Image 1 (cartoon, rainbow, N blue to C red):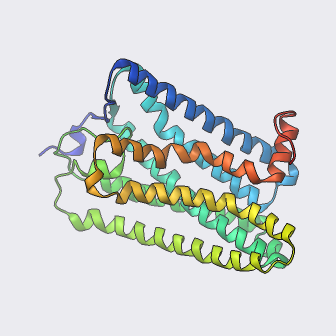
Image 2: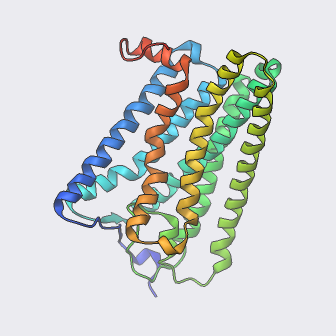
Image 3: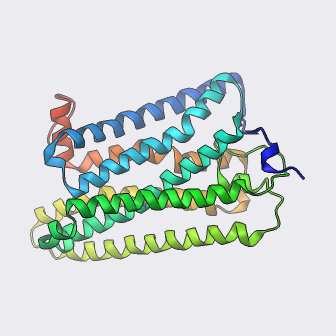
Length: 310
C-alpha cells in the first residue's frame, strides 16, 4: 500500500485527439480565461472607482467578481500549460493547493450568493430598514463570514482528502485536481470519515439553498404587489441577474456531483466540469452588466463609447 507522501505527482486527464486538438483546447481555454479576466476586472474597477456604486449590492458583487477571478485562475492556467507543453502532470503540492483554493473559492461564492439573496430581500421587502440592517460594518462582516466559511470548509476537506492513503495509482480523471476523483485513488476503508464530512457540507449547502428559495419567494410576492409597472421592472432588473447566477451555479454544480453513472465517461466528465468550474466565472460579469442600468452607466464613464445607457 502506497501512502500519499510517496506520490511525487499526479497525472491529470489527458486530452484526447491530435496535437492540433490540444492546441485548440489551449486557444479555447485562453479565450474563456481572457473573457473572465476582462469582464470581472471591469466590474471590480468600475465599482471601486465609482462612489455611486459604493452600496451593499455592489460591494457583494465586487467580492463575487474577485472570487470568480480566483476560481478560474486556480484551474485553467495549469490546464492551458499542460496542453501547450503536451504534458499532464501536476506536483503533489500543486494538486493539494489546487484542491484547497478551488474548494475555498467555490464554497465562499455559494455563501456570498446566499448573502446577496438576503441583500435583495431586505432591499425589496424591507426598504425602510435597508440602511439599518445592511450598514457598512454589517456588509463587511457578512462578506468576511462568507470567505471564512469557505476557507474552513476547504481546509477540512483538503486535510481529510490528502491524509488518506492512496494506492490506486496517481491518475486523476479530470483536467484539474478534484476531490471526488482523488478519493477514487484511496484504498482507505474509513468510509464514515470520507462520507461524514461530505454529508455535513451537503446539509449546509442545502440550508443555503433553502434560504435562497425562501428569500426569492418573499421577493416575488413583494414585487407583484408593487402597483406601478416601472417599479416592478426596476425590482426585477436588480433580482434577475442574481437569480440567473445562482441558477447557473447550482444546476452545473449539482449535475457535476450528482450526474447518473450511465453517462459517466472521460468526455462527459470533462464537459460537465468545464460547465461548473470555467463557464460561470466567465459569463457572470455579462449577466450582471446586461440588465443593470447603474453598472452600465458607470462602465460608460470608465470606457466612453463602449457602453450606452438604455
